Image 1 (tube, rainbow, N blue to C red):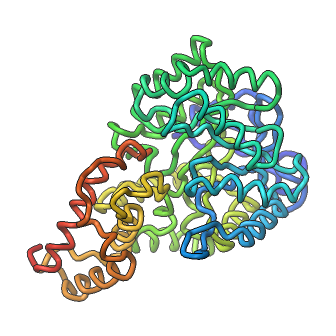
Image 2 (cartoon, rainbow, N blue to C red; image 1 turned 90 degrees about the vertical axis):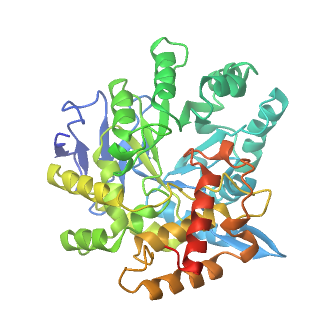
Length: 449
């Protein structure tokens, strides 16, 4: 990867991104910031001139509270976060009818509608995973307008194409006429930019690029999973290395929106030895800032989404992008070494999106994976009886597991029905991983590791 050159635009602290990953500047691509030191960095969408904040607010992880025994979004906290985000320059908000069991759009609409409509961009999706019928798809589309309290969408996505390949795409969007309908909505101005989010294998992505090249699908932008681990360390079977996705979109000059820059939070909570190396280099910067700077260093990226649950990551992310520094070649090489070390840990590639929920058998799938991953990355993972502090680590894992996950919702209750598999954008073999964790817990209890 060649070093990108950054040149100053007019205005104190403003940055313009000069060279692309291949060594040449993308046509019409500019990075701009407001005048004054410490202002939010914006990228200009070369297709329509939108000035989009380089950090966007992903609305998949709104804060939740319990009311009358039901988990609901904490609207007061959401309002506070949205107000703070807009006040500090964040203007891109990404949601979906599928997020948080259908609650996300409404919470976003309530919070955002308190601000002038031209002060923010709304991105939402046609998430018709469960019912591809025309009636259900149209209803979902129209409901999004009502929930978001708007009469147009700035960025609208076909949600997670690639899952199920060409056949699923045809069923969800082509045979039912929804793609033609959405094109018509774009002509009417109810959709300003039409794109898709992608999860899938290389041949599936190539198929959608072929549709673009042939003129059948003239996407305005594409949303991909990209971070310094998935850049070259995706499994290559169910998911594609992000360097390939980026290069293919870059050569077609398609604006890119980034999801999972932190891998569901795992790149904000890296193993201790990796964190120590990062802190040695940048003691005043957060661990998460490395991942966001990685995304922002790539000039075709229009916006990197962060699913912020409380004010702490919001404030930290604003700090990163109001004092944005692109990574040097040497720093990019350093992150590749960190990614290689990350791959040595036996974690589950779960991003905590919760699409697999609710489990029909009541199992807390994302909670189990999150507890397991955190234990591994924080060094609280007993590997064998010869390990130093084995007893202490064993007891710590078992006690924390019972505290984090109620007994009736633990991994050993998985019957392998497979209901979760079709919903996972990471294509994780969820029952297999649950059974692996259940065996691990049983081995700890029996001292058979």
